[in-house]
Length: 199
Ligand code: ITT
Image 1 (cartoon, protein in one colour):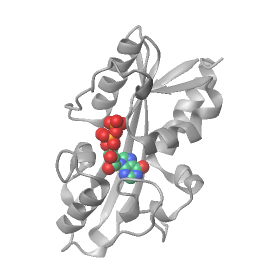
Image 2: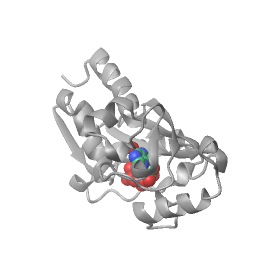
Image 3: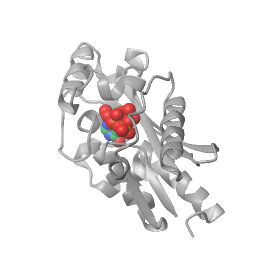
Image 4: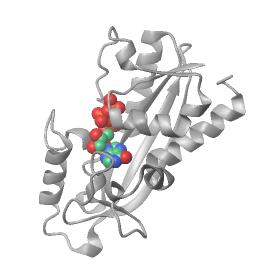
C-alpha cells in the first residue's frame, strides 16, 4: 500500500521512515503532490491538528495519509510552547530562534522546576473520511544551554527522564526508543500489522 506523509518537516519524514518504512510498500510525501494546498494548523490540540492535516491530504490525493502533530510542553510555562512549538519565536522562526526564546523565557527557573514533555499525535486518514489516531509522549527536563547536533527542533535542550544526554546527543536509534514519535509510530505499526493493510 502507498501512504502519503502529510508533513513538510524532513526530519519527521526521516524518523517516520526509520520506524515504519520497512512495512509499507511505498511512502510518498507532499513533494509528490504539489497541487495540495498548505493545511492551516488552527486547531487547539495536537490531535485535532493531526486529524485535520491527514484528512485534508487523504482527500486531496485519494490515498491514505499520515500526519504528525507534535510539540514540547513545559510545565513551568503552563504547557507552552505546546501546539505553537514550531513557531514559538514567530512565524517562520527556525529551531535556533525557538530554542533561544525558550531558554530566555526559562532563564530564572531553577533546575528542579524545568520539567517538560514532548507529545506526538499521529493521524492516519483514509480517502473515505475514516481516521485513526496514535499517541506518544516522553517526560524530561529542559537544560540551560543547547547540547548536541543530532535530531531537530528542541532536541538540543531536552533531556529525557533518567538520561544525562539530550536527544541531540543521542543516536537515531536511542532517540527512537525513547521518543514521543517513536512510541506513537510503534502503536501505528502494530495497528498496520494487525489489519495487514500494507500487503
Ligand atoms: P508539519 O506540520 O509539516 O508536519 P512542523 O515542523 O510545522 O511540520 P508541527 O506543527 O507538528 O510540525 O510542529 C512540531 C514542532 O515541535 C517542531 O517544529 C519542533 O519544534 C517541535 N518538535 C516536535 N517533535 C520534536 C522532536 O522529536 N524533537 C524536537 N523538537 C520536536
